[in-house]
Image 1 (cartoon, rainbow, N blue to C red):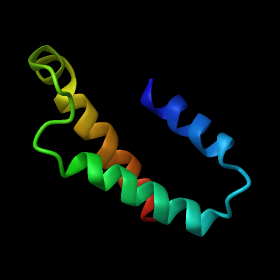
Image 2: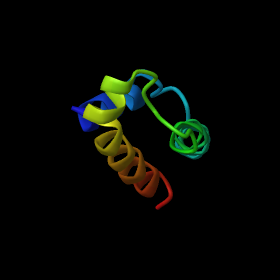
Image 3: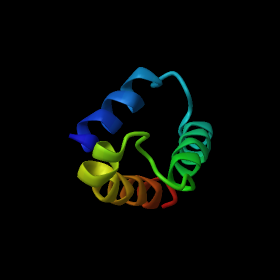
Image 4: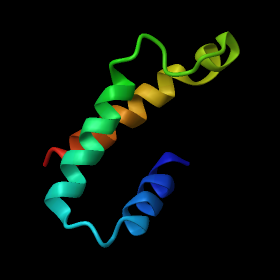
Length: 65
């Protein structure tokens, strides 16, 4: 589910050249990854935090290439 979302975000910002898009998107994803928890509810943390961190790491790695 996250990968199609990332593709949709890129399509929405297709007017932004690659380098500025990568830099801005990487900055945003890092801000989420640096949070103590990604989800604000305990249920969300237990259910999805680990997968969300894996998704963020994968996207950040792709953007850093």
